[in-house]
Image 1: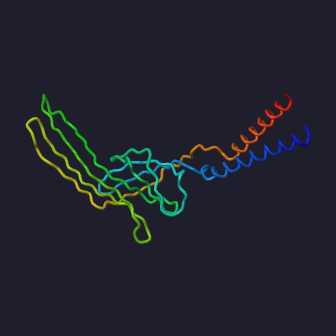
Image 2: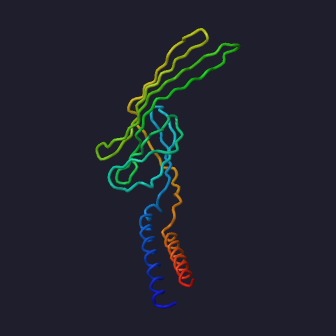
Image 3: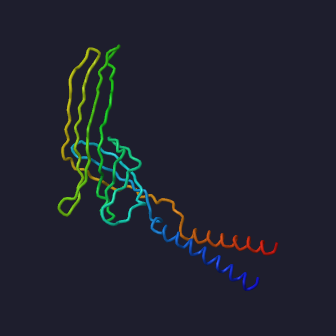
Length: 201
């Protein structure tokens, strides 16, 4: 290998390592990303459940919002938002309308039918030197049978405190910076071999 070839090889390796070093720096924080699982409980018989979300987009600066992914609860959390302040989870922000129908056989062709509808809201806000989550909900159930309307029941939950507990932290698989550097060296070597073949042809 002559001096000119050595210079070209050194330049190719140097530029490639710098490029992948930049990529590795971008990915350093993301090696800490995790999928967090929280349980929640609403006072006054308001229900419970769990939800999950990834903190990969969290910067830890100021107020931030992350969309909730997987969930299983007494309420549909589609569109729910996890609120953070200075990197700390503070609570959920969500609302919805639920519908349910249930029938109970009472012998022969007779039955009792329950038709339920609930409207609810869950909010989180900063109080004096602390944060708190509250739940408000209104539910109504209409009872009927083959002969018609039997009655109606209502449930109102106002300012019920919501508590949260972190139950699982699963790391997200993200390529480590060393992977980027190794790939960069391999590409640099391939580039030099291709150049050498052209020179020999």
